[in-house]
Figure (cartoon, rainbow, N blue to C red):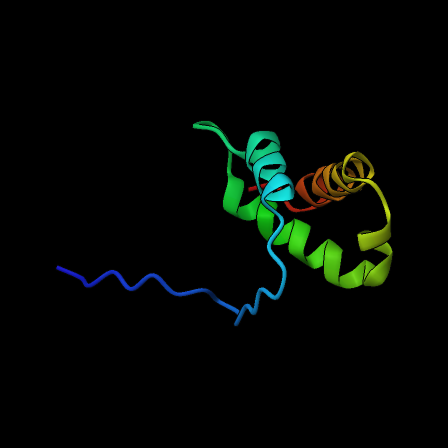
Length: 79
């Protein structure tokens, strides 16, 4: 048997919640046949690498950039 502890890999501090962005990410990358954890990690890394620029662009542009990065990473490092 094992004990499941729900912890994040990296510490997260949310100062301002955005339920619209959260629901948009879940609808775009969620689903039964989707590796959503892998995609969300890529989105977080993309957001950190672009910095403040991501905050200033629209949600659909952010999702397009995230999906491009996902396609690139999945072609280079297949699961």
